[in-house]
Length: 110
Image 1 (cartoon, one colour):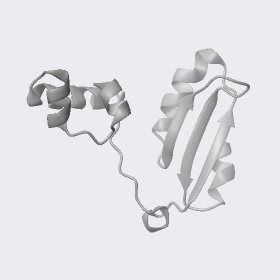
Image 2 (cartoon, helix red, strand yellow):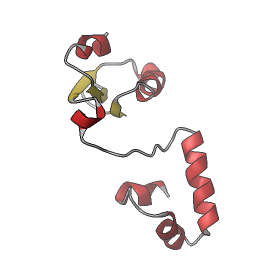
Image 3 (tube, one colour):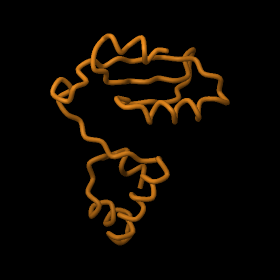
Image 4 (cartoon, helix red, strand yellow):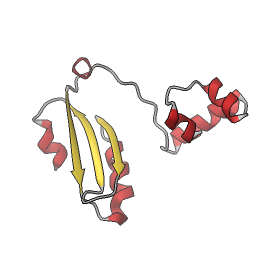
């Protein structure tokens, strides 16, 4: 299901059920379970200035590999987090956040 949603994040439950060869109720249960496990989050994009978070900033960080899961989960729970992912390279974590103002940038960095 996740690979199908990665391909089309707006796929309906019915199209997922058809494509996976399972019932509609099975898809709905699995989507709910993935949400409870914090593996899947449903999100709606909107006009940022109208939503109160007009400033979008990217952050790159170096996090000890053993701490990546804990740090990543803490960041995705913060209000305004748009994306957070472990990546390879000199910086191993990237965060993209929507903030109320530029004054919020140092607080998020801290």
